[in-house]
Length: 418
Ligand SMILES: Cc1cc2nc3c(=O)[nH]c(=O)nc-3n(C[C@H](O)[C@H](O)[C@H](O)COP(=O)(O)OP(=O)(O)OC[C@H]3O[C@@H](n4cnc5c(N)ncnc54)[C@H](O)[C@@H]3O)c2cc1C
Picture (cartoon, protein in one colour):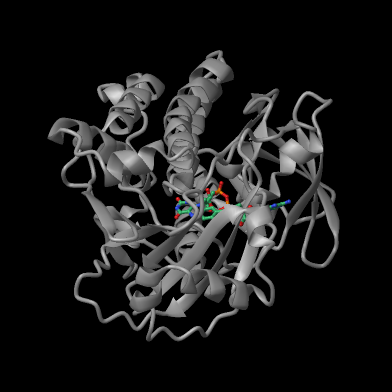
């Protein structure tokens, strides 16, 4: 029976329920449809809807390909991305992802997430997933044989969905972590971001629209800006800092962001012709963690599990990776095999997340910045770092994946001796 013939009333039963139609949810839904599973996706918002997280990593292309969504994304008219650039005062360092240790994709896109996420959700629907917008999961009961959620639809009507398995891809909504009290604090200090979209008016020929530009604040190493060019002459612009630092700036979000941009001379020059036509927004305290990424009848995908930090643009790649691992585990489970979700889903996911974590920690203690701005690492080491910046954080042939913390500490140590 087709899911949409089931109606909303009372209680419905599905093989797999996906909570949230962000990148993790849509890719998981498509991968499960490839296994011919019956998939219902419940999404709280009406799409297209704004989301932050616009610079993808090349590794993510592999999962779009797996999910049968690559062509739609390639034809979506998004800005090509081939690397990452870092600036601090007069210093500049860039990584071209074609020069990297790991095999695989070396380009990707910088995407307006409203359009990108909608496109992925439409692709999941095209592959047979039922996607219900403005249907919010408000409660869960895991005491029975199968988990059962309570849903509130756009009319305020309540119904129940009993599922063979639940994938929570609710992002910062963090539905199951909240409802099942799985949340644990992140080890990172509470940071926030101010951000907007601008018509950038950039004329500098040195500015490379194919790369994200990360600029370190001239006086505070732990404060940084992103500039993510889009294909239409616009950019996503944001600044990240501890919330106490952001609180020093007064006025509207736009005024605060403009004041911070004024403090960096290179950004100020680059954006001197920009038209600020969209009110800025603020997001705070986004880093989050959980006790466990899986439990009886459910698994947590993407941001619903853990979110580290935006510095290396790893969020969507981790979201896709989690969807891919969960779909593979579910294939075995539905085939009647016993799946150890911790060993087959949580542990392999954590491997790459921990690689990114070590890089994020190195960034904020200033070590990574010294490596890229002051040291001239040998070409092979640069290629290993480039691979991780391109998202290949699970490639065990890379010594900076196998032995991340020790390698990074050694490299940082060399810089401090100079
Ligand atoms: C400041 C900042 C900058 C970032 N920059 C980048 C970047 O450049 N590149 C990158 O890859 N990542 C970036 N990220 C991270 C990125 O935004 C996330 O990692 C990514 O969106 C996670 O995808 P997801 O599918 O897990 O969740 P989401 O994209 O958040 O999707 C979750 C969906 O679930 C829905 N939902 C929530 N609650 C419910 C409910 N109760 N019922 C039904 N549906 C629900 C939501 O409406 C949403 O559509 C950034 C994050 C921050 C904070």
